Image 1: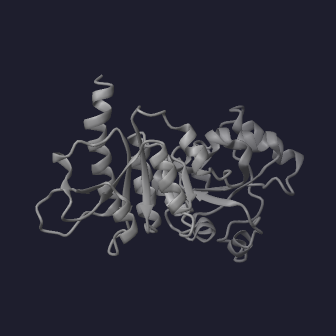
Image 2: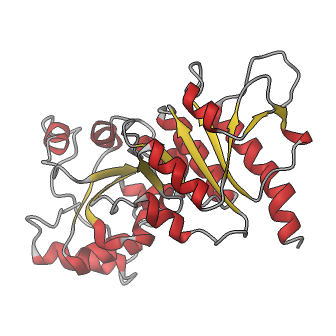
Length: 300
């Protein structure tokens, strides 16, 4: 597929014809021979210079969600030929905005994303503007209205982060707070697993002591989730304004965070294993909050 850099006028017309549906049988031509016929091509694609501040996303739903919410951030598109129909609107935008796009082989995307789970598409975008804790709290319903936030204390696995973001979006969580010192951010792997949720659930980095004070001021109760010796989840009345705190698997959450929490919650189970995966724990807690608080607010 011809990239915008170096594409001829004839190539532009062929691309537009396909995108606009005027020539369904045609396909935009490749800018270079396939890696099967030119051994240097994968290296050429993989070596494409990357602007330092760009964000690289992959996975169909993650990329489509990013494009839907911030198309102006798009800087480059790589896709396999099989993904052209699903990305028709994106390619039309690229033609209109003179943004580079290129059809590549799956092996090229393996290298570009350092993953075999790219689902045939990769976007380079400008990253979203970071959201401050103050801005996040201003977005939430005013007290005493129900509001639910998450706080991650030491969680770093991108697949767990992506999975819990997906659950957070499903259950209407207002945002996720992490320590500024931890430097946790949404990677390409996390965004793929989140299936678009990373675009709708903001992740905020904040100083822990300042965050605790601000949350208290806005009427939130902190609840630490612990594998044992906490109040059983289903025997607890959850506060409507709640921050659920989750620690890393293995290490758990830090002592200061447990001490700062007014509630300590444990998910009851068979006892055959010590605890649930953190992403599974998040889903269970969020489901119970929805049942016990949100369903009271909106029974329908």
